[in-house]
Amino acid sequence: MDADELRVTYLPKLEVNGAVGDSIARTIRVLSSQRRLQTLLDASNVVASDLDLEHVLRRIAEEARTVADAEYAALGVIAADGSLERFIHVGMAQHVAEKIGDLPAGHGVLGAVNQSSNPIRLTDLTTDPRAVGFPAHHPPMNSFLGVPIKIRGETYGNLYLTNRADGPFTDEDEELVTALAATAATAINNARLYEEARRAQQLSAVLGDVTSALLASETIDVFGVLAHGVATLTEADFAAIVTSDAVGEELFIDTARGQGASLIEGEVLPWVEGAVSRAMEGTASISPPEGTDVPPFCERVPSSSVIAVPLIVSGDRIGAVCATRAESRPAFNPGDLELLSDFATQAGLAVALSWARADRQRLGVIEDRARTARDLHDHVIQRLFATGLGLQAFASAHPRHAGRIDRHVAEIDAAIEDIRNAIFTLRTRKTTRTMRHRLLDVVTELSAGLGMAPKVTFTGQIDAFIKGELADDVVAVLRETVTNVTRHARATAVSIEVQADSAGVTVTVGDDGVGLAAGDKIASGTANLRARARARGGAFGLTPGENGGVRARWHVPVHGQDVP
Image 1 (cartoon, rainbow, N blue to C red):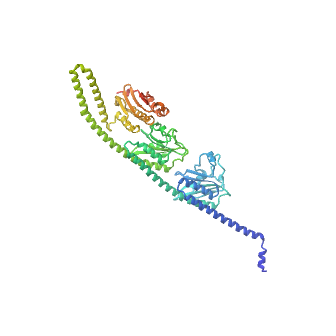
Image 2: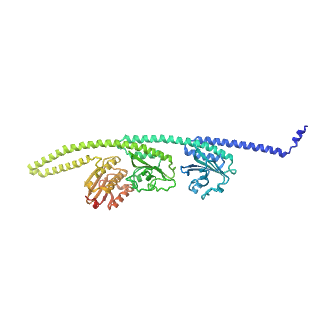
Image 3: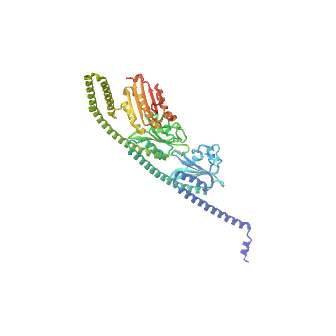
């Protein structure tokens, strides 16, 4: 037997066991690394396979938690001011998150990660001098790893991991999560590009529908088409077109679509600071997520998140386009704001074209009415007048028929007066903005919604007694009253009478619709009418019509300075 073999035979057993143990440990580490690399590869494939941005962000947080074997993970999206715009967390039970309340704002250690361009790894984040503590009900957290997600050299957000299963996070954990963050950056960028393409396609489709609708009919409800387009485009619960006489004045909800639209359309609301008022001033905005803005629609419609942009037509800011979502829905984001702004810009052009076409048609109608008025004046009235003179001459020659003939002559005189009133109306021109014209414009505008032309009667010196602020009130009253008839009455005939004399101004609107049985629905739109009447020392009331339906009467006295 060889001496060397003898020496190997008698090596200490402990030394042999140590060599085997090291070999086994290295094998386990290699296998573990291969397993974790496979996990990273699987996670990268999962993250890169989705194109929905919201899904991508959540999957990144979930896969990072798996790769690093952490208890909790989160992905924070950084806003332009450096704060956390969005915070998506995984691993924490929903009821625990609800107890904690508000999500992190990006202070303390999270803020340090936001400001750093490199990963931050801590054994115990509670002992770090930058820590600001946890809110009540927050679960305990110790080990921490924060890794930035960079897109084109700029930090888009950060991955936050806490409570590693086997002690503090390691160099290998940091390398794996950093590699995942690089893949995540590509996935986020792809998802954003896809989202932009999808939004552009959606915008094009909705604008096409809006433009076609606006140019397809002469009597189309322009703002109604816009509001429907806004609701479709932004996937909102509620959409509206809001106007106002001036910045800081009351807001008029001209048109509304969606949840609660019937409760607020046609209403006048106070000017409050928020997204809608800022849009009326010319600035597109979203209500702050902290909820510091006053709800613009008096909580009648879901408005946890509000988005609004100016509506500009032919260079004039005529109002605001706004949309809301309920608390249970995702809040609007800057992408939604950009999309709605683009829509409002293009829709403003479509509205301008629609109105220009309507103006041309209206001009043609005015010219036709002018010709009709000339014919009535030059031919019909003269023939009636000649007929009346002939009858009077006949009555002089035959006294016994004079009584009956005088009655016929009186009817002819009344017909002549009616024709003269008709001529006055037919000769209305847009450049002559008398009170009669303003009221007739309102009736013409709302006739499409009624489905018929209302009968309009003016009594007294309308233009002499109704002027200034009173004129604005009367126009608003007529608009609100006829709008209520449109929404609730289901009428087949509507009559409007405006009377003005030294005793006061009275606006009466009657219909043959469903009547007061509609109860609360009719009453819901009358608060503003009563308020306008009380402010001038007058009154507003609803009574049953003589032939069914409802008779609305608004009356205010004329002040001394208004009397001609």
